[in-house]
Length: 166
Ligand code: HEC
Image (cartoon, rainbow, N blue to C red):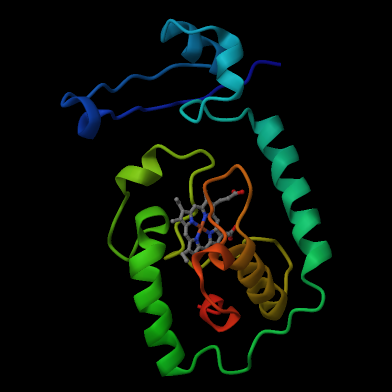
C-alpha cells in the first residue's frame, strides 16, 4: 500500500523566506529533505501515516472513555459569567493552538503534529457521543492533557476543576 500526503511547509516566520513544497509520501518527504527515512517516525514536521493516526486516535478515545464515567458536567455551562471567564482563559491559554473565530491559523499550530483541532468549529469529536459525555471528555482532556501531543494538562497550571468547564 502506498500512502500519499500533500504537505505544504511554510518556514517564513523562522528563516525569513517562504519555502512551499509538495511531497508525496512520508519517506519521500524525509528523503527529499536529505534526512534518514527513520527520522520520519519521530519528527513533528512529518505527519503520521493514516494507519498510525487511526490507531493512535482509537487508543486515545478508548483510554479517555474509560476514565470519564464518573464526571458530571455542571448544569449551568451556558451561564454568561462562566462563559465570560472561560473566554478570558481561552484567549490567554488556548487560542495560540486552537484558534479564535476568523483566524485561519497560528504559528505554533503550524509546527505541531497532531495539529490542535480548531475549537471554533462546532463538530462532534466522537461520533454518537451525547452532549454530556462530550463535555465530560473535553473536561478530562483540558484537565489532564494528552501526552506527547502538545496538549498541556491544565491541572499542572495551578487551575482548579471549575476552570476547566469552558
Ligand atoms: C501548545 C498547544 C496547545 C495548547 C496551548 C492547548 N492545546 Fe488543546 N490540544 C492540543 C493538541 C495538539 C490537541 C490534539 C491532541 C490529539 O490529537 O491527541 C489538543 C486537543 C484538545 C481538545 C480535544 C479536542 C477534540 O475534540 O478532540 C480539547 C477540548 C482541547 N485541546 C482544549 C484546550 C483548551 C481549553 C486549552 C487551553 C486551556 C488548550 N487546549 C490548550 C494542543 C494545545
